[in-house]
Amino acid sequence: MTTIRINDTTLRDGSHAIRHQYTADQVRRVVRALDDANVEMIEVTHGDGLGGSSFNYGFSHTNDLDLIEVAVDEAKNAQIACLLLPGLGTIDDLKEAHRRGARMVRIATHCTEADISIKHFQAARELGMETGGFLMLSHRISPQELAAQARIMVDAGCQCVFVVDSAGALIMEQASDRVAALVDEIGEEAQVGFHGHQNLSFGVTNSVLAVRAGARQIDGSLAGLGAGAGNSPTEVLAVAFERLGIKHGVNVEKILAAAEDVLKPMVDRLPMMDRGSIVQGQMGVYNSFLLHAERAATRYGVPVADILQEIGRRGYVGGQEDMIIDVAVALAS
Image 1 (cartoon, helix red, strand yellow):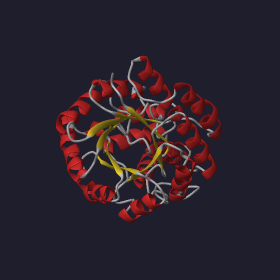
Image 2 (cartoon, rainbow, N blue to C red; image 1 turned 90 degrees about the vertical axis):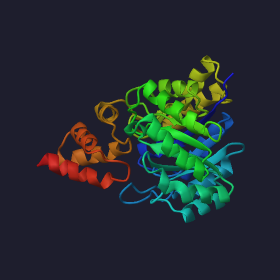
Image 3 (tube, one colour; image 1 turned 120 degrees about the vertical axis):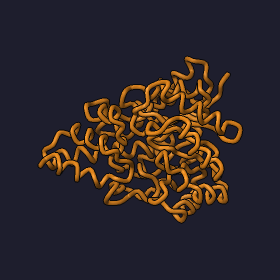
């Protein structure tokens, strides 16, 4: 029987959906519920990772390092992880997160830029941290090209490379073929993971196919809370995998309660497959752009879907949030 680990990103990717306004008390309650449900890894940071609280990405309500410390204090069994984007977060940030109790880091780069993660993986391994690598917008390159980027991460010290569908653009075999290519390249040396989004409603399906292709870590978030149309819902993943005989160790009843009774009352708006987020999946637009595009649409009187379509045509990637205003101004004029 296949055994996998379900990672929960409610307190990181979910931060996008609430404009990074998590409080320490909310983090404590979510961690308690996830820990009680036997979730083994809980990711906690600003949506854009360590150092993400900024004018360009959005300011956090509470410093993410403080949130990590709260999460570590609350968790009895779960490992607390953080996310780092090289060029935004620094190795000093990583060392401080480790000092606060984070024991895993996922280092995220654009799918063609794995080489900028090398020193960060090396630093994390020197600290004794578990390491994961995020190859974002994985739909942008072929499975073979993605596998070559995964090789760079593994050689640098990455222990699990994730095919990250940052736009919710991958459909079925487009996801599993990428996972299979990574397994062929690094399968004996590191694990492969999958991080899905729901823009075209394939997040859970893609996760199942990823496991069948050899993935051993799968990401979700409670109630799908996350960027764009949201992530694969952790509670749905747990039930689907249980139905399919895929072992994961998460307590299904408790994870359902965590989503329904703990997370949902905290948030004013859950992600949905609306016109804007569907266009993101259609055009391959980075999911964290959605709320930025909505604000620009309101300010300049341009339909949000038009902004996202133009962003897709221009091929913008994570880190270019400030250029969304340029698109809105150009369309308005």
